[in-house]
Image 1 (cartoon, one colour):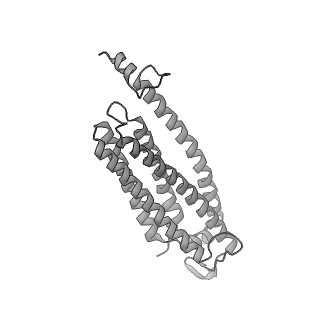
Image 2 (cartoon, helix red, strand yellow):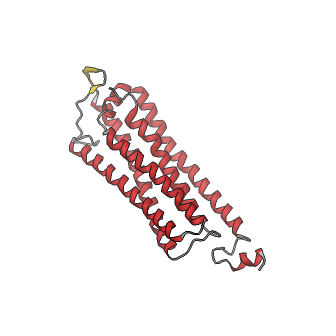
Image 3 (cartoon, one colour):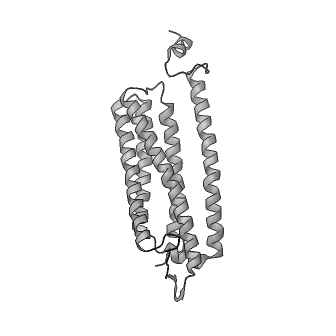
Amino acid sequence: MSDSEVAVHNPALRHHFAEVEQQRNASSLGMWLFLVTEVMFFGGMFCAYLVYRTAHFGDFAAASSTLDLKLGTINTAVLILSSLTVVMAVWAAQTGKQKALVMYLLLTIVLGLAFLGVKGVEYAEKFEKHHVPGPTFHFAGAIPGHPDHPADPRHAEMFFSLYFVMTGMHAVHMIIGIGLFAFLAFKASRGAYTPAYFTPIENAGLYWHFVDIIWIYLFPLLYLIDRHK
């Protein structure tokens, strides 16, 4: 059977594409364009954070020092590990290892849920300490290195507003990714992906790597800048 005949009989090939490779390239381009819009979306929040952090560095440092560095580090390790499981899932799809593909997708889901669980613990602590912006917000910390100089609560509230917006939007993207991997794992268990067709796994992997990279930027910006000994 010729390559063109294989393409015609490939159930994964959509009617508006001449061949599987063309479909894959178009799909990958679409994902990269989507990620560009995501970069602009998160980029705006990063810029706002950096502008305000520069303007109110001491107050932001005081608020930042209340974040749990241990939990933030654990979540960073969890996400790095999840990137590895995603890479392994793509490899399993490329090599036709269906059971391994399902396993790595499920492992990625478990790691994603673990990340959200840890983040939930952090959020609960912020509610308990009244560090959530709003009418009940309260902050009485001092500027790091200057124990006699209390931080301005208004600027601390600004920090926590940006903290919840940025980590919250990141969490939303995590939830979307987990749902996506759950769908792909279900389809993979039914043999939907083969070495000849694994584009959805590849594109989902790109999305997940992007979400991980966003956290790699969030972690030092929120947790590490001016972290005092």
